[in-house]
Image (cartoon, one colour):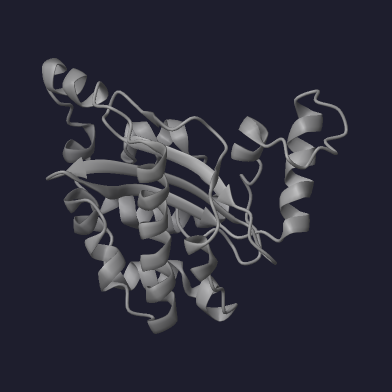
Length: 217
């Protein structure tokens, strides 16, 4: 099943077993030949060398995605978020599938409008990989729940559009506990320094939370 996902996101996201069926449905709706097709070396090199957006633009890109998601969660209509996906992903991920994926967010009444006022903390340095995908990983340290994101974007007609994403909303306590576990596993001590995020935070939530991770593909 993993071979059916785009190679750049296999390397970037770790798939929880609980969502395997959902991911299989989404991935299998795209022809395997399309997923395995590679660009000519010169074109791939050109994509990989495009500049990473400035800090302010990166924040705006993330906020745009989460604000669209928040609006769609309130109405249970996901056409706006669907239009934010790359054309490749629009073929396999319908608004109905988005609605199903984010049912836990609606059921728990999550409100992410605070991302408009809070600055994101990037857990890994934003990068553009060899496939030309802009990879963003970080958190909005909101209360009572942190908004943790893994986002992958492709540039389409000059606009960064979603190629893949993962969004978790752990409580502050769950987030800190996950960070502490990662630091101990990495030999980093007791992890009491809550302000030091880094790669420990980026990998901290490779498990379902309540509300569960919404979507990974």
